Amino acid sequence: MQKYSEMTREQLLAEKAELTARYEAFKARGLKLDMSRGKPGADQMDLSRALFHQIDEDPESGEADFKNATGIDCRNYGGLDGLPELKKLFGDILGVAPEQMIVAGNSSLNLMFDTVAQGMYAGFSGCAPWLTQGKIKFICPTPGYDRHFAICEYFGIEMLPVDMTPAGPDMDAVEELVKDPLVKGMWLVPKYSNPQGVTCSEETVRRVAALRPAAKDFRVFWDNAYVVHHLEEPGDELLNIYEECRKNGNEDLVFQFMSTSKITFPGAGIAAEAASPANVAELKKRMSFQTIGPDKLNQLRHARMFRSVDDVKAHMHKHAEILRPKFRAVLERLEAELYGRGIAEWTCPKGGYFISLDVMDGCAKRVETLCRDAGMVLTTVGATYPYGRDPRDRNIRIAPTFPTVAEMELGAELLCIAVRLAALEKLLG
Image 1 (cartoon, rainbow, N blue to C red):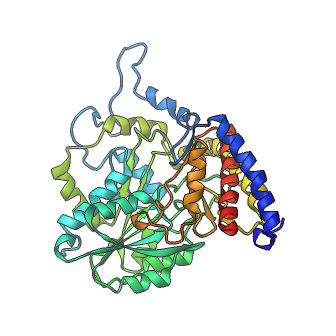
Image 2 (cartoon, rainbow, N blue to C red):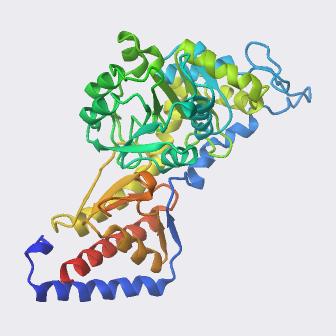
Image 3 (cartoon, rainbow, N blue to C red):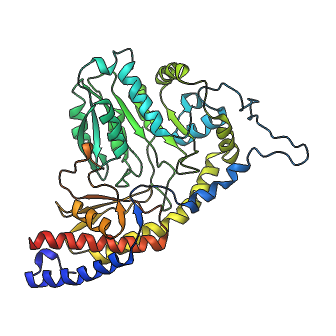
């Protein structure tokens, strides 16, 4: 396929005329497609309908069993850090002991926000609250997760972008930045990152675990949102960050997060946080003022549905069967329409919820506008960068999970037309 940069002006104009006709045909359809966020589809959520029946009344006695395996009545107060069964399950997934787990409500984002707030107003490792130390900063691998950046903006934390490479964040840059005592944290989605689908290499995990920040109260926010979310088998393997930290005498360095938001129900899942014993003690001290306990009935439902990691893996295999055709619909269209034209690059993730598309510099916002005007909403361009500003105006996060396969096929075609038109407009001036 000929590169656009090698075409004559006449060829570019002919190409634009053909694509404009295709684009106008799409506009005439009156489409309403939403690829803005990585939400599970209804077919995925239907996989977890059994949750509703985990505490059903016994047909003979007319009674329901509200007690967990250790005899806790889940209707009542208590259990600040969650049910023991789920602490073990999440601990097995993240590779830490159950006593290092806090199992809470449905939102890992809530746990991350609260943990940052604790750093701001109470401090870690016996240090003064971040808020009193000056203008604090967080390292932000980019492109990255917009909600991480939103937390920083809320607290007035300065964001320091570092490039996300195929092996994870640029560790040379990270190791240099942590020499500043006002750098207090780093965000990282270590497995199937949002949006590129990158899994940190063993070397990267080891270098993170071996960091020697100038700030004793520096913390890595290890958002393992897609830890079991494979699209292909075998999926990527991720080195155990806590074990690597322990080897380096750095047990307090990392807070780990995960949830069942994209395993069961986003609005009624279970979130968990893992940390060193010292960090857990600090977190629970705050929690003792914040809550009397989580929704243990929902935790009980999850504990009965998933009694082991193998149960979770079997469930996630069903998710992959639903998602794989949607991702393939996008990737096949990108390959057919864009490969070899020299105007775009994209990721082919083995897991997670997104495909990252880089178009020609200066064209992403135009692609977004073209898609919107034809009835398709994309993630806001710039959202994958701190302060919503993509310095090269080129990254587009594709979220193939919520639409149907047929909708994804239409959406991917429209997206490719928009990418090509935006590139032609730029080249033609």
